Length: 308
Ligand code: SF4
Image (tube, rainbow, N blue to C red):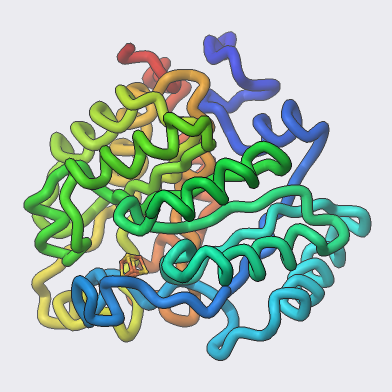
């Protein structure tokens, strides 16, 4: 069957990051994961102390962060073992990476951008941590490098967000998102499927509402139960049932139908730390999930944007 999806050079029926990088940067681009030593309003007492119920504080490899240049040396060595001349985006991933005075952000981001082979920045943050001076600096960065700001909205449903303790409501998310969009900053929205209290129609609604915002990118992920999180305790007590692989794949296929074709789907599976993963264990087999999504899309003649 012919692939009806336009932003694809192969059998993929969604706009992959691989396709985006190939057509934007002329080839594969990797992510160098960094820990800038930030905290989060959900951890430092500003909005809470326990963090979101699924959060283990990010998946950074460094418990006590090394200087950015040292982290990048390690990351680029890891990446260049596979591809000797690889280029990478410096990805400030751990906790809330705009939650510091702008002078500190400047030090960290500029150090990363000076590192050989780094061609852009990705900054994971919250919509309530984007004050005007930070937005001004991000705008300035946006003019001279490939910048993405990643927002972990996870769901559009406030009742779910209250349950896991996100610390801001959907209206506040929209304000932060619009501030980024009005400045032309590429924004990637994170969605988590399988959050306690949500059923298939809730997850589909999240995709429908976020798709209507026409984000430049999204990451679709599965709720991972990780050691040391509040959800780990609920799972042990039998209060949380993780999604099955079939239910997850079916949900993702239907969610993709609600995103515009231009939205880059940066991820359709989670990337939780294997050593900390308690459930669901099937999620460790990413190849099977990726292949299953492709197969299901073909069987259903489904593709990104089909519902629009
Ligand atoms: S906002 Fe992010 S870093 Fe902060 S507690 Fe929630 S998931 Fe963790």
